[in-house]
Length: 396
Image (tube, rainbow, N blue to C red; front, side, top):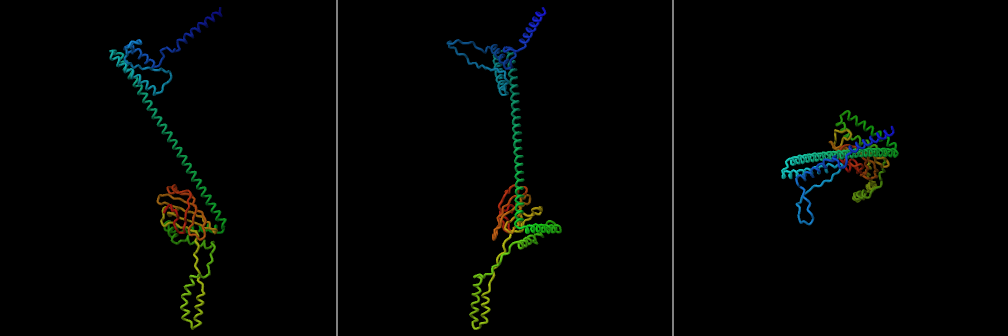
């Protein structure tokens, strides 16, 4: 008995549960439909009330039905995009307005007001969707602008890093080249290398003494007018460079005028033998030729235009060279685009061919600033003539 009662009670509970479940779930034909479905059903019933539907004409009757424009809608349970939903609302508003016009012609005041309210609501909803799409497009453009700005900022940072790395590499290469040239000069002639360092130090001391006594402007000018730097390097060249032997052979061109000028004298003094002998001795005298002093590219010179506001580059351009005994030449050159045009420095190296008055040196940019540094090449070939402007001249 107890077992049967339990089975009956469980059966009753199961029936009740299934009944509640069946009543709670929405069916396909239930009223839980979308607003678009409700509007569709409302339009169908309204067309029936307004007699917008026409009876079916059998085939072969020959009657032509008036063209009635009906709107068909496809319901979808999926979420529509804002554009599709906006177009849907505009289509509903147009259909409601058409039904309101039909209700007005039929005299149905209630339907007319209802359709007008529905059309107004659809138009407001379409306007809200349009505003939402406009906000989305504006925000999307803002995001695109931010993305482009971030990309441009990243590219700028990359360019700055590349530029800094290039400058660091150029400076490192120039310093290595400078030290290599210094080592070459030391190995070529260690005594001269030490003497040149001591001479540079002493010249700097003399220059600083002039500046301390007379001030930056007049001290620099006095040091340049005395030409101490050039005289010191000329003496250094005379000490370490090999002297050239002057030729003692007489030249034909120099002896011919002497013979022609002495012939009349011998004819006029034929009776006396003693007067002829000094003339013969004057004919046999040799006239030594004067050989020019070889040019040694050791020294410093600069432009006539000064830049008094800068002590590192006091002139528009300046050259400082040192020629070793084997003919190798090292030094520096600077250009100063004063006022406010920047500056650039180069380390120079090359070989002086004996007898040549011009010198071709390879320059490597070692430093600078502002416009002149940015516009100057990393490496440049310079043509140097002693005590003359370089070619090319970046600050003439």
